[in-house]
Length: 133
Image 1 (tube, rainbow, N blue to C red):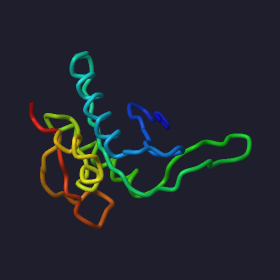
Image 2: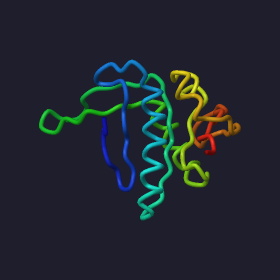
Image 3: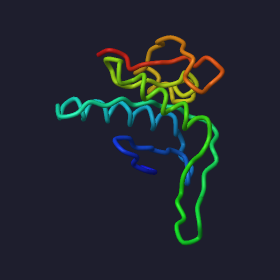
Image 4: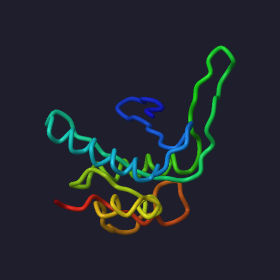
């Protein structure tokens, strides 16, 4: 589900508000497909950060202007990985936890990249990137 557009970014959610059998795999697959489609169009460049984890999901705001959204550390982590992805040749960076949570068939498309301490987080994030074709 595309939850919202903010400027030139989009927040996509897998597994809320309805369950999904493999939300991490679906998010990783979508990241690969988006990067491929954008590259083939040749008009713009993107960075895609992919993170899974527990978030608060639901309606926020006044009764006259309710908005469904997700809030939590995974949202912030994904935004930071998106910034890193813009400088990576494959244009997609995922957290290790996300890759490990996906089904094995999807994991085969990703390789370990390194460790980084993302802005605003006091811990190291192990990153994975798209496997070169």
